[in-house]
Length: 237
Image 1 (cartoon, helix red, strand yellow):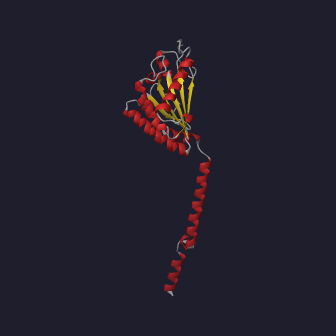
Image 2 (cartoon, helix red, strand yellow):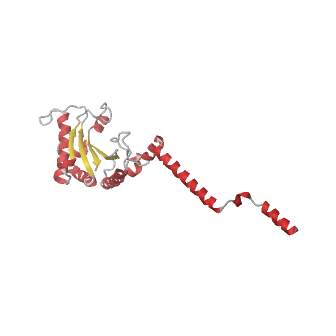
Image 3 (cartoon, one colour):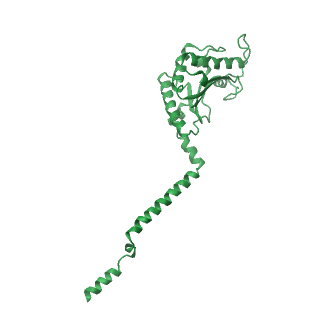
């Protein structure tokens, strides 16, 4: 009798949580996973803009726009923007290749490469390509143009070459104004890409902005040097 009474007492002292059926444990896990899944979907639907900007900014290292690579030709705010998934992959690869080639020839601090929303912006001072007041490509510039062409030509859907000047007027027989000079320089680069670098003509465009799209105020010789530049705006396919 005593033995039977002790057995009953032991059964009564069992933890009531342990008396639940085993299937309820599995069911509870499944409900938790489903809840987690819907919370995850909700988080995707409500993107925190600040966190997203922080994440996109972290791409600077991958895209070759580190702070220690900035030069006078770098304009604040030109850093990489948001890529769609395909362009991000293509762009990061091509920009890394381009920066590596430029570093090999010692031009990484003179040719600035930054990501854009759908491609890449390549910027360099006018003296890298031309003599003062002229639109003929100098011999030393051709290897640089070849590096740029090789890096972008396979994936470029559009390459716009833009010439820029400072506010100092030019009055020569060949170039009556800065409009003619900036346009002629852009056209000369486009012609070089077609004739010597194997870029398809249909993806190329040339434009001259004269002095009307400055990066900085034209109030010092140093600033005017920054504004005299050639830009390559590449849009990926």
